[in-house]
Every structure is written in structure tokens, then in C-alpha cells.
Length: 261
Image (tube, rainbow, N blue to C red; front, side):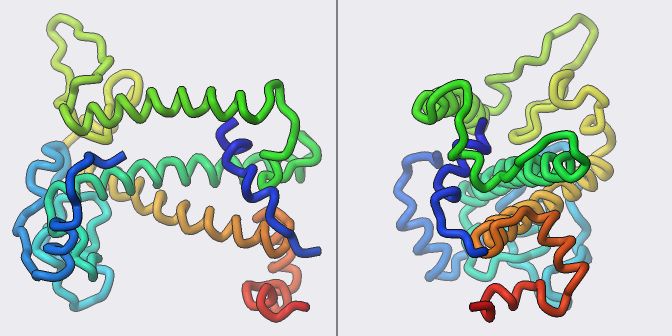
């Protein structure tokens, strides 16, 4: 349903053959202009992960990471050329925003690829994710939008409350002689979200798993942007475009979108 609502705007395009309400101006100006740096700004973000070593891989070999990117965040490769994360409160928000967008992007990419693959196998028919918003469902688009808005608003409200007061929305049942995991914003864990207890091990493996998650999420965000451009320029799904490229890589590639008449 979320994909159907989100793709309504895209389906109308021509196809070829909630941060805290604090004043941010001063903070951003300070981060961008004054050169103020806050050492170890991410300390305390998570007590579950093992910080990355000082000789960790960086986005540009030989570069020096800014002081506020000290390796305590998953996926920290020292990339912040504009100094946007020099404010510790903003850095916490940016980290959570990237984490949520990564998870949504991974779900979106899976929701695009799997149905198209099932269609190619003959299990479903007439699938195209980019015009899903223009189809008829069990309710009209306005009703679907209102329902989705209410459900997502409730979930996002609870997530916001957990950022303000970590652990206040935990639903993990409290059992005798059982110690619940310490609240860690963005990683609820527990029986519902970590039934295999992968996030309760030693800090080093937990950091490895979280780094893998954020790296896959970043890749998924880029992939989704690519899917959108493919849908606009070719009117086909990503698997169809991949097969066309493999069959004729010299003509079916990104440059053909700018050179075709």
C-alpha cells in the first residue's frame, strides 16, 4: 500500500517508448562557517557497539577525518566535507535519519525487484511498480493515504519519543530473573525485533552487523534513485533494463538516455 501511494506522482510523469523545533540557523552557521569542532561529539550515541579503530578505512585514502567522526557510529568513513555533523545534537539526528531512510530504501528495493522477478517466472502478471499508484485497490486513493498517514504517524511518533527519552516506548516483556537489553535508539532489539539475539553479543560483532546494515542501506538508496530514472526514461523495471543491458551493453546503458531521440 505504501508503494502504491508513493508511486502516484511518478506514474503521472511522461515515459519514453520531524526534527525538534529548535532554531537551527545558528547551529548550521557555526558548523559551516566558524570552523568550530567538537571532539568526540558522538560519544554516548551507543554503548553497545565497539568503536572503529583509528586506522579504519576512510572515504579518501590518506585523508584526516573530522574530530566529531571518531568511529563510534556504524558506517563512519570520515565523510563530512561541509561539517554538517559538528553539532552533536544534529549528528545524532542525521545518524537516525540515515538509518531510517536506509531501512525504507531496502524495503522499497526488495518490493520492486521481487514482484518483477515473480512476474518473469509467470507467478503474477502485469506488474509495474512505477504506475502502481494509478491502479484501483480495495479503497480510493484518498482513503488509503489517510490510513497510511495515521499508521505511519503513530509509528514515527513513538520513534520520536524514543529519541527524546530512550527506552520509553519499549514493549519487551519484563520477566523475572531476566535482564532486558539497555535501550539503544534506532535498534529496539528484544524478542520482537531481535529474536535471534544477534544484537546482544560482544560490541565488536554488533558494530560489524550495524555497519553492514548501513552500507546496504546506502546502496539501496542509490539503487532506488536509479530505478526511478530508469522508469522515467525507459518505462521498464530494473530487471528488464538489466537484461537489455546485458544483451546489448554498447547501446543499452546510461548514456543512451541522453543520446536517444
